[in-house]
Amino acid sequence: MTNQSYSPSWPAPRANSPISSTISLPGSKSLTNRELVLSALAAQKSELRDPLDSRDSNLMIQALSQLGTKIRSTPNSLQIEPQALSGPAEIDCGLAGTVMRFVPPLAALVKGKVSFDGDAAARNRPMETTTDALRALGIKVVGDSLPFEVHGLGKVIGGELTIDASKSSQFVSGLLLAAPRFENGLTLTHVGDQLPSLPHIEMTLECLRNRGVQTSKISDVSWRVEPGEISGGTIQIEPDLSNAGPFLAAALATGGKISIPHWPSVTTQVGDQFDGILQRMGATISRTQGILTVSGNGEIHGIEIDLSQAGELTTVVAALAALADSATVISGVSHLRGHETDRLRALVSEINSLGGKARETPDGLVIEPAKLSGGLWKTYGDHRLATAGSIIGLRVPGVEIEDITVTSKTMPDFVSLWNQMLGVAS
Image (cartoon, rainbow, N blue to C red; front, side):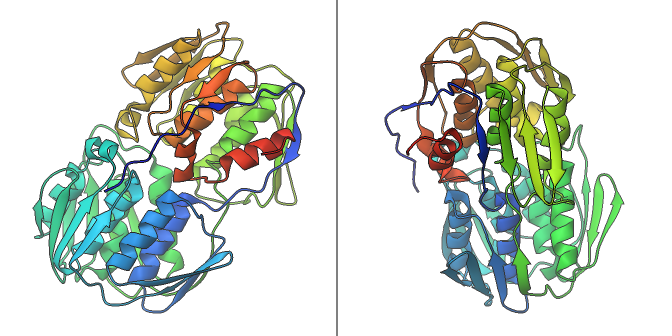
């Protein structure tokens, strides 16, 4: 399996004046990969319009193709023709949590062995909830973390299942996406101290409902998916609102203005919460005819915020907090220690390496005002660490991003879009 190679450090461009730009974002990774899985399980062909083209989505396409699905790429769309799932297969998860958590339940529907592995860093990511869940459903699984094997029987009986998804809501979504193909469907219940990123579970349920699957929310920690057909059809993928974060933050960091077209009026994406968060930090925000515009005046204020349901926004909030005029307290994000890297430790290390004042708490971060200076910002193979450093570099001269190529995980065009925003040549 592959490891990403490291490129020479990238000098994060500094903004010498307030920016004013309109940025069109690529499609949502979360929606693209959920719809790819459902398309592979559907009864008819599907077309995904404006899907994300990134390392994570390409790894999902490769995984589903390994299981027999026919996927053809055309300009701005993917054509998916479902086939009977088949093995044996070898799945490269890279560092994509959606691949390592969404595809194993599909592999349980395959008769034969499906092997999973990924990048070296992926071997440290929690997987026991998925492997234990499949065993509870009667499937033989060898291993509890990458690499592991799923020995499917060609069918899954389903029924009732209890799991602990405290470390990631992806464990829930992966099982729910496959559940319509289980003979008895699935009643899934979470037990544990916390359940992060509930909006991602609602996104999964909405994707299922939009394809004709009968679902119900029994409680905040229990869901039912009935067995039945998954319909095909044409699916429009929303722009990725989490990936909008660094660009929206740039308006505050530079005292400028950023507009994002095609911002949905109603969405299950957690990135929509940037609207309220950035206003609390000093931004002015307007929505006009599907365009979200964020304006800053050069002031950034610290906040106290629980990001338990929007953990993927933490790196953007932390980067702005490092530039703020008062302290920021982020809570509810202990699960970020099990993402692409330990994001809490990494953020503290890198902010402090530039002269900042950050520390970990049991479930989050405290970041206090400090004068920052330039230096190397390490990325730990994590796309969101790379973009966080880029935000700080807009105001602090001399910031060097260790490996900007890690942004290819969800946004391969990040550098060109960043330069476009700043009005400079790539």
